[in-house]
Image (cartoon, rainbow, N blue to C red; front, top):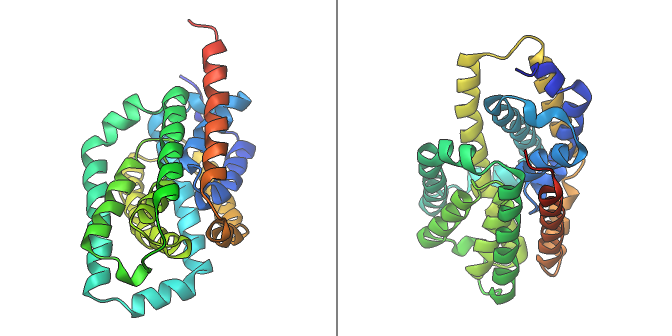
Amino acid sequence: MTDPLEALPLRHAVLLGVLHGPAELLPISSSGHITLIPWLAGWPYESLDGELRKAFEVALHAGTAAALLIALRGEVGDAARGLDRRRITLIALSFAVPAAAGLTLERTIEEHLGTPESIAGGLLAGSLAMAWTDRVGGVTRAREDAGAADALWLGVAQACALIPGASRNGMTLAAARRRGFGREDANALSRHVALPVIVGATALKGTRLWRRGLPPGLAGRFAAGVLASFLSTLGSTWLIRQVERDRSLAPYAVYRSALAALVLRRAWRRPRR
């Protein structure tokens, strides 16, 4: 059995944390990158126990969420002060769908959809969804118009993002654009429905990790990754406005497709055991 400290050296934990911040803010799948970059670089990360890998990814999400709560405190405060029945419904419904999907399908997804090839498939599928919805979606609605039906669409989008490579940001942006929201409003809705899911997943995985415990010495690697994720997110929040200003989601779809092609090419050339 691989030593966890060898599978996750301190420098790799920090580099993955640095990568996670911008990857989470762009619609390119942070979880996909956290798996694929070590695989492409030949790091021993994939030899780390699957539960520990998942826990590390959730820890990185916690660092990103904490940074976003600080960087977007004005926006979060405005949303909290303006909380009414419509917004509570929006948050509740968009949270319930991925929560139910995660609780029922988590093990199946982790066992069958965590390979580089399946992540590449998720990247490609997400790219098609983003490109199509961005092309057909019209700017006819503002975020204040979002109702129960929109919440369900956003919830389904977040449930689809449980598939590695799909991207929560990308799927919710695609769903919001398809529902007729403009780019800025779609981004705001994406952030507002994502934070509760990230916090919920972090709490669930954190509780499991606390009960199980970490191998000796690994806690420091997790802490370094979380700190790196926190700082890289704070330094990358300008990317949020960049996505809002971009005229199309197509460049991100092209990048995702290129990465998927690189992964599939490497996988097909890999010697079979």
